[in-house]
Image (cartoon, rainbow, N blue to C red; front, side):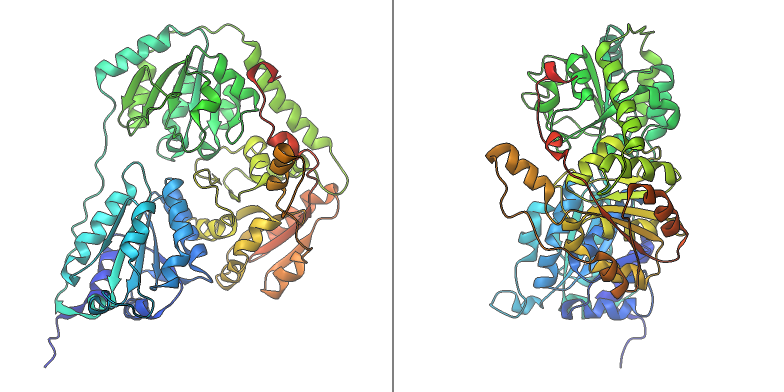
Length: 554
């Protein structure tokens, strides 16, 4: 006789996901995940069927970055979990919370060569914060609660949970509660360290602020803005801190830095006598690129201790809640009347000149500055923009201004190509009813283009812009710089409008620069996904990758 109160491991897992507030589970079906899928078919978070496991993890990554709660992925064993490796590593290196659940062969078969059997815990260990296999269904609520906490704790990243089929199908008396305890709320840095930092910063004649990935969190951006209200220092930003400043603080903005040291903001950082680095992670931008010999005084303010290296040795280290530490520091810093600095003026003038140039460029193919100018003029500030990796990413990071936190998404950890369309799907689900615009090159789009069908099936309000040049132009520029020639970077033309329509999306093409704004407005007014193909003029890409010395940054 069957016990009416008995529950399976799969049911316990879904109960835990519900208790943790999970709304969506992204994945591709497979044999080792079938017991869990059968429960999801009846209840629990909504299952989002994806076309590839890589795209599924990217969608969950966007969900994690925007909401702060881990996005959840479910894959099968063998090739299913292997396909998810790239997205999992990307989430960890981009500091986004994700929990990936993988089905596994029964425990009795794991010791031998068997169908779709591999050591998934060992495979995921180097690319996650924690990789574990459940051996008893009774432990699933505890494992899931800890997985979520670990994924969310600084520095955020991916956690992997393996569930053998026999654990998912085993029964025991239930239900079992999930012992969820939210991650601890940090306080501000130690008062003595805050006073020491304030003394260093109060003496500065040429301070600068560098905002990193953790400064761009929605809960922290207001504290950054309050700090700048009282201490309007020149502010450089990494790509992933986009959106931290409001329009009100544009006079402080000297540009985004990253990838290659060739921006006027790099010179401001090098000529500063003190840099206050807030939420900065060296994976975003190598400190040797912007600190040189490390002689500039440095105050490190973050949730976690600094990763100390030759070019990154803080004079003072403030570890604690970023927002609380910034507010406390703002109270302690004395008046700092700043003399005019030519490098700051040069950075501001350069940004204004590039924006003005973008408004004037015309013709076909379309210059990146013109597209970015018209895109910014067309979009409301609350529209989420996701950006892929490639030459277009550098153009967008340097010239597309954003004024809301976590509304302009870049990948700077592994710089993984193919993220923008899946990210757009995750963003549209995280912000229901809101338009999302994604931007990719044609090379990066083709890596995850199959997820366009997912967007169409879900009827999501996504506008995806493809910068077409029939090649991997960033690699082309790097080869020309380093070897004087290009090889293996060009592929055949594709009808992206026809491709979009074949999947049920609206397909549009921009032929001339003057058509950018009307085409964007048409796309934003349409229902469901829209793909816009844009022939792009990459003749100035050599400047993106040309690193110059500080003395030449004018």
